[in-house]
Length: 256
Picture 1 (cartoon, one colour):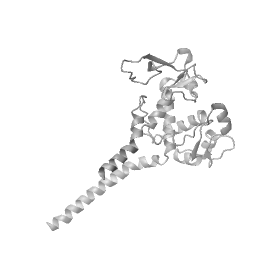
Picture 2 (cartoon, one colour):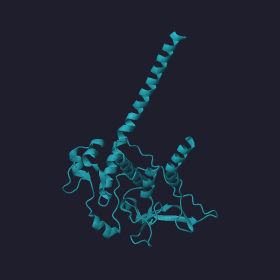
Picture 3 (cartoon, one colour):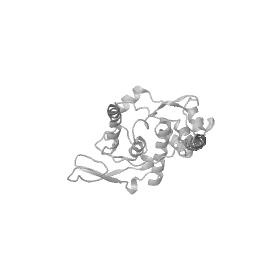
Picture 4 (cartoon, one colour):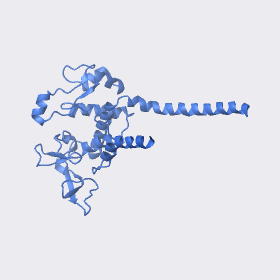
């Protein structure tokens, strides 16, 4: 019985472990969901650069305002568009038919993008930093984390025009940071002086970290309270354990 249960558990976890151990090198996002300022900045960046194509159909503006400590006036002024109200779901204004005509496939909803896989936060963080110019692609962009991605680099004005650096594959064919193509390994990126974006490298990393934190929050809004309560729960359980031990000691002292 024990062996069968262990086997079932391994079968469930196998896809996650195989994904985490893939050839793509993921950077550690190190997000802090208790940093409300980061979540607020991430919400603003998402609405400015991502919401035109991607929806967050399981999140309401009112819940966002409550969790991120924003006033209804701030949400309606900076985050909503058109005639949307604070009680509405965060859906994109792009019609599905238009999206399919322009992109070949409607951009996915991102409500649960940061959930479901081990290291998904690191994946999002690395993905948004890994766009590079690829003139062979129809839209002129490619991504080392998700090759052939149909999504263009919508943040290029902030980051700049990034170009990949590569080296020939070693004899064992293993690339430390992932492969650029069948014959070369990715070694890094470069941005030429006349192609720099509005943000410095440090500022852009901060912006991507904010977007990643925001999407992580959207994927599980209850995590904000769950993590803040965690310390108090541990302290309570520690106190209760001590109390139970003292009670046991007092009870068994009379019996002995």
